[in-house]
Image (tube, rainbow, N blue to C red; front, side, top):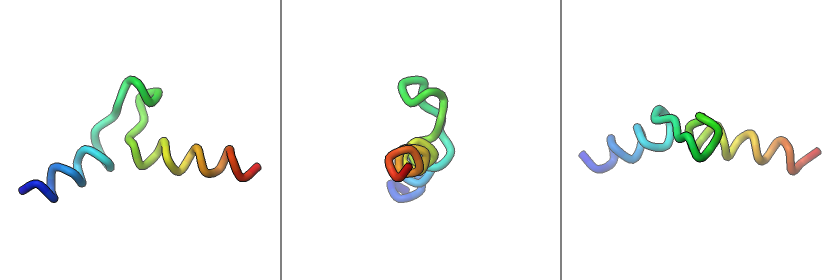
Length: 36
């Protein structure tokens, strides 16, 4: 289903443009760096 693919894309698939992080990991990391 589309929902399953979106979940995979955001939570499991690494992206070279994001430093080989998932979008979720990249987002969480950016929040931590911006809060400091």
